Length: 269
Image 1 (cartoon, rainbow, N blue to C red):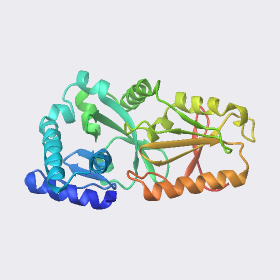
Image 2 (image 1 turned 135 degrees about the vertical axis):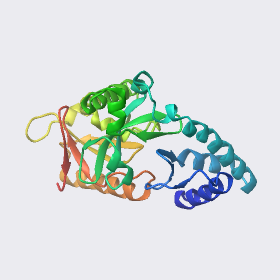
Image 3 (image 1 turned 120 degrees about the vertical axis):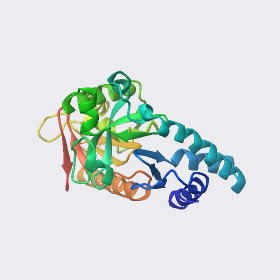
């Protein structure tokens, strides 16, 4: 069963068990929405395939899983905390498709034409977008929220494994599964580490250490040297675009040139 079919099946189950909660299909493939919360279904789909659940077992698994989620949704202080002390350690930066409707009310900052950076409150089962009124309630500026969210994600990323494929072409992949792998490109320290890992051939034509990254979906980041020949760039860029079209939580078909200080979209090689 593919992710789209599985999502529809899970939605039918949760709407039957929880008819008054307002569950609906999310704006991203493989995501259900309920109020401000977004619930990814990739892990549940993996469990379904690995355990070979029959219809009754899937029904019960979905019911129990979403009953636990709803306990969190009903507790407003666990979704969007009232106090700054609780909210602060749970802030993260996230990358989202720009066409997600919920972003119109959220704190965002520019990334690319098809992707927006946002600030979210993390939770065990998903995340909620932070709005300007939340920042005001906590007595914090938007700039401070962004910096704290980056600091928190960096703390999560210090021991994040980077898979190095020697190639040729050599590339690095980050796929921890915590929902923030693509967003790690927002962190200068991670960009520095990627460039350093590719150091033997990472100097760009202008002499500045650089690399190329792709963020085809929320749970994957790939990087390679900016000094690779054009045909290898194009090969890897095609892979990024194909991955974005077929995976869950899609982000961008574009690739990006990174240095420790900045990120630029690449429109062509």
